[in-house]
Image (cartoon, rainbow, N blue to C red; front, side):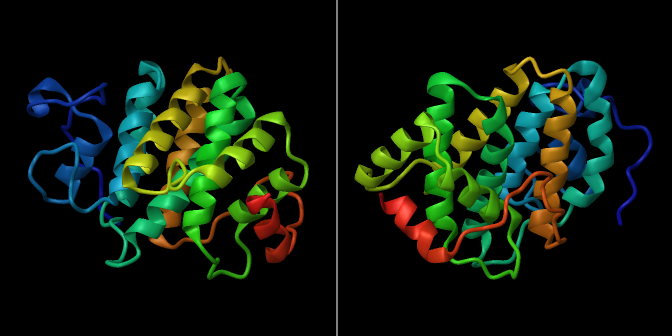
Amino acid sequence: MPRVPDGLPLLGRGRHRSPRDGACVMEYTSVLAGERWSDNPSCVHPALATLARMVNDCTADEARQSLVTVVPDLVHSAGLRGKRARLGQRIARKAVLAALPLATGLRRRTLCAALLGAEKACGPSRVAHDPDREAVRALLRDPDEAMLLAIRLSAKAPRPLAYDRKGVTKSLELAVMTIAESGHPRADDVMRRLLVDCTALVRGVPAAVPAGTAPGAGAREERQALRA
């Protein structure tokens, strides 16, 4: 695992011209990877880089420095060629699932639509147990008003929110903003945990089963709920 080098500046919001001006978590990663100074290093999956920049900028100043410990795992997390698009959808799905419990009103309805779009785009799961898919199925088995509306709208939309790269970016931005603005006393921890989990997802590390996740319904039930 690459070692975080000494002497780099404290993490700060936004982009920086050089280390003399500060660094965001992605600029930190570019140095560790041996790439040119950039907030969008090629060694990191594009969706994961978007998530990391959002978490960096939305985390409170006093908590942001803890993100440095995630940097070594971000290096070489670009994903395999040909699987990057699917990984982007899975990152979006995980981020929206983290934000939904903290969302209300229009934002919750938008996140539900994003979740359905990402779930459709993820396609069949290639793992024996996919905790994020189980979480989506649980939401579909007992949908609230926001989810019911999102299901109806997604059935009419030709390309649901979060179905392409632009949608993934918008979904990630909305999810992180929802967590940051929720007023949750541990919002910074939730965002950091999300970044850690998504980094593990891209690197192929098995994810822990979310607490309280209900057993999954069958694939047939899921398809029927998405088409309802």
